[in-house]
Length: 429
Image (tube, rainbow, N blue to C red; front, side, top):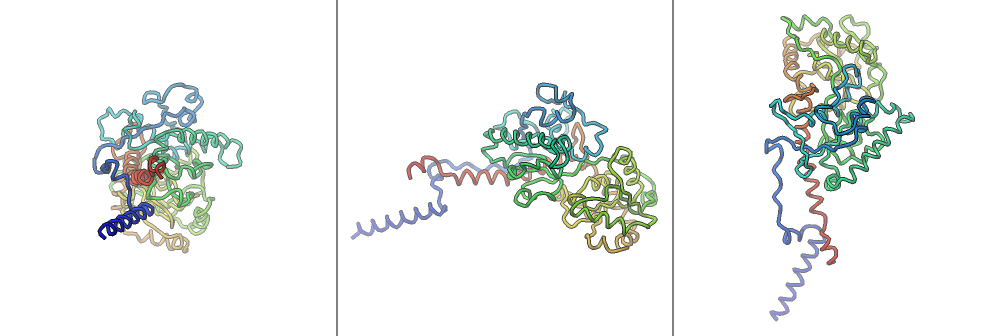
């Protein structure tokens, strides 16, 4: 009798274990392999992010900065890194990729604290940086998808994917711990969907489907400002010193949400204390924008082709209170910086109501404006891209954001490993 009971219990237990394995609620590997403790969060350790940078041929990065740099041989180092050209004009706004690469080449001998350091051994890396100047490639190899010159951009993308797919570190994580800048709206335009698992550095999500780019895994970067920073902004009365109420200077013909610019031009025309001027980004016009922002209390930031634009960051470093008109905008470093402390927000509906926006600005209290102006002076260094990099500048902030995203990437990698059944178990079955 006891023998029958024992047999029945054995069969029942075997049946339950088999069902549990089938349903995925029991992982036999925990019985046969030692459990590895989860790594501590990088944010908790306080140490710099260890970044391995792929050693790509020059054609993927500095070779696009000029024929001279494309002909040079050997790796790019701190000593031979080409300086960013002073007369690059509007191309500067999409140069985040350059400053990130430069920060990893810097040896840090200045003694400043660093958020990320380059490592030569990929086995010790927390993250992997892919130094492909995807935004510069857009402006170098044609602007329109129908332009024959864009074939050069497409070939670079195809070749880069081949390099990554041959990397055991890319294979190991499926690219989840790889950092790839894509700040131009058309960056990596041909094959970007094939990199949707990676940590993308973007300026907004205007042209990215939710299946590819989200705040949960990607980093929102500032545009690189094109006007000169206002470093000696210390008048006795800053409010009265700025004689223009509201300033806008830029292209009024844009796509998507940016179509509001034409409508705003009609609504704001005729106000003596408003300057709303159509222009293109030439060196002389950039100088005029610099002067105009420094003489204005408020700087209008309507959407461009995508929800964000360089103009917002030009306003910040000019200490001109941004007036933001967009229903879909995302901001860089918003988990650390409260934009309501130095910006004013209007919905698109409010901005298109004749007279509403201007009247609200005219009635804005002087003391509140002065507080916002002071706050702009306090935060503007977070939007500076420079070499050598400095503590708490834009590159420093971006690497810290990458550090915040990595635990999610590491979780996905660990889950993938857990869900993969060992070969010996497959053979046994």
